[in-house]
Image 1 (tube, helix red, strand yellow):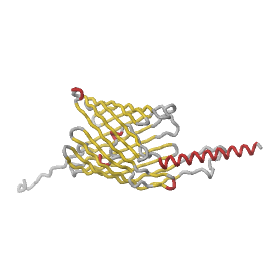
Image 2 (cartoon, one colour; image 1 turned 45 degrees about the vertical axis):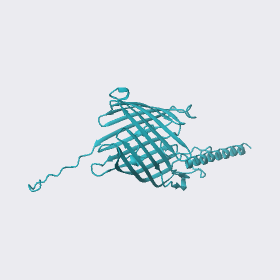
Image 3 (cartoon, one colour; image 1 turned 120 degrees about the vertical axis):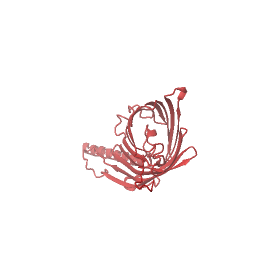
Image 4 (cartoon, one colour; image 1 turned 180 degrees about the vertical axis):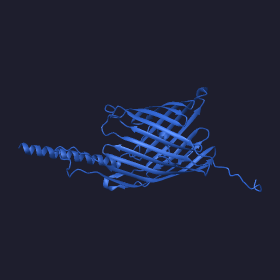
Length: 319
């Protein structure tokens, strides 16, 4: 009798584990796969390839953002983004870049790699960027199971697996010389499905905009900047609203409000060719009693591209 009850208990626990796994699989199939960053103002290229190189003034810039989301929450997302982009307008009216994003959530790992291109056109009192990105997205699971019967080789539980597929983005981005910008874009246009993992790269849509006001309140070194990012997969919609105060283009501080999720506090320093930033998100959703918040670190470095060399004629007949 005791053995029968024990065997029944193990069976029930196994069924519970499988049910939880199936629920998790459904979440990944229909859930939000694109990243969410408080420093989204420093990461326009990966979600809108049209923004690649716009406003960079003949520079090449590298950006890295690390996010530790929902700190102290077991299995919470840890993410790393690396972008590199170059404004090539002194050679021809365009820009190019590469973006890599790694996301770890529990047993799962997601990687996105894209090559970005933007064609720049002078339009009215600003620059319009028409951009496209091609690349790949991979998703994998590497579970480490702790089963009720102590058998990690239980054949009913899935083992490590991964799969990759083609990916593409498209975007339009306009920056006015008077201080405002706006953009529309879409990511994961093929919306490919990874059947082996019950995972699909849902198509996402973005709208962004912002405005910078220099000499705010008639204070010469002070600038105020507002930014908005709206994202949707046509099932859910969320928005980030950010306000920053910038002092003498060196120090900045700001607040970000993200619908249904968090309020972020950010601060940073521009030093020579570097930008350093940090943000802390105060969780306001249902896991606020468990999470101690989210942390982000930003490092950005820009370097001017060499000017086009001027060829001097050596023959006196060609002056």
